[in-house]
Length: 235
Image 1 (cartoon, helix red, strand yellow):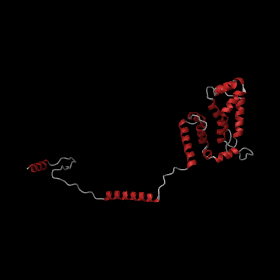
Image 2 (image 1 turned 135 degrees about the vertical axis):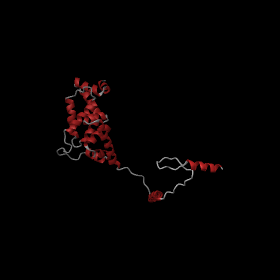
Image 3 (image 1 turned 180 degrees about the vertical axis):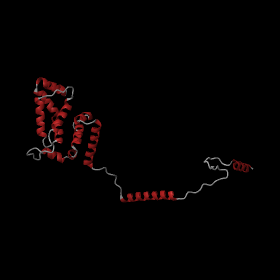
Image 4 (image 1 turned 120 degrees about the vertical axis):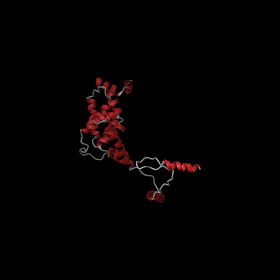
C-alpha cells in the first residue's frame, strides 16, 4: 500500500518525503524514474567515465538530498549532472579503460555516432532537448547563454546530425539526354535574347497631325497644321 502511494507522488513530493524521513523506498522510486535517462545523457557526453560519474552522482543525492526552492526535480537533476560533467576533462580517458560494450554499441549506431561528432555545446543542447525533453529556456539557463543563441545552436546541431547521417541534399536524377536537351533550350533562349538586343530599332512613322515636341520639351503640336488636316479630311 505504501509503495503504491509513492508511485502516485510527484517527483518533488518524493524528494520531500525522502528529505524528511530518509525512507529508502522514496529514494528508490526517484532512482527508478531517472536512472536510464540520466545514464543515457551522461554516456553520450562522457562515454569513458559515465559509470563512475553516475555512481558518484547518485551517492551524493542519497547522502545530501537537495532543497529545490520551487524548482522541478527533473531540471535540478540534469543541471547538477551537467555541472559534474563539466568538472571532468572529456579528452582524458579513465585509467586502464578498455573498449566496453557500451562504446561498441555507440560506435555501431549511425545516429549515436552522428551525435558524437557534434561540438560539445551543440551536443549537450541537442541531447537535453531531444533526449531529455527539457525546454529551451531551461537549457539556455544550464548553458548560461541567451535563448536565441540556444535556439540557433539546436538548429545547427540538427542540421549537422542530418548531414552526418544522410549527406548533402540529393538533386533528382536526370539522364544525359535530358541534360543535353535542357542545355540546348537554354542556349537557344540566350541566342534569341541576344538577337533582340542587337536588332536596330525601326523609326516610328509620323503623321502630319501627330503632335511634335517643342524645343522646351512640351508636347503641343502646330495648331495650324492640325486644323488644316482636319478640314481636308472633312472635305
